Length: 161
Image (cartoon, rainbow, N blue to C red; front, side, top):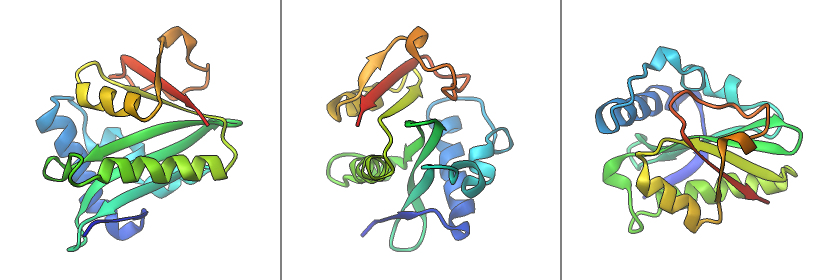
């Protein structure tokens, strides 16, 4: 059984290790824990305005998924740090879908009008997942000026709420 819950300090080590492992080992993105303020202190980074950070916890307490929402402008949110551990991916587990559903419900309840996200060209499964959930690809030139773009991002999406 996997529960989706708001991040708590007890999740820190497990969440950070999982995200960095996926970034480095699985996708070859050369980034460290220290280079990611949203991992170093998720509560301080995400919990502003409508922002929040959630984890998917396995029965033993290990974090097997994460997703974050940053309110970067009035009525505008950015989806960040959506990761699911490889052994918990896929429709059979449904963790990614549950994480996204929680984020979208929270964003709607908070009155956000749109969610934007950036990803890399290599994350093909992520592209299909976002598109299946109603996100539309947008050109980089069409991003809001305040959108918190990450250096490796080359593909962008938006969903109206």
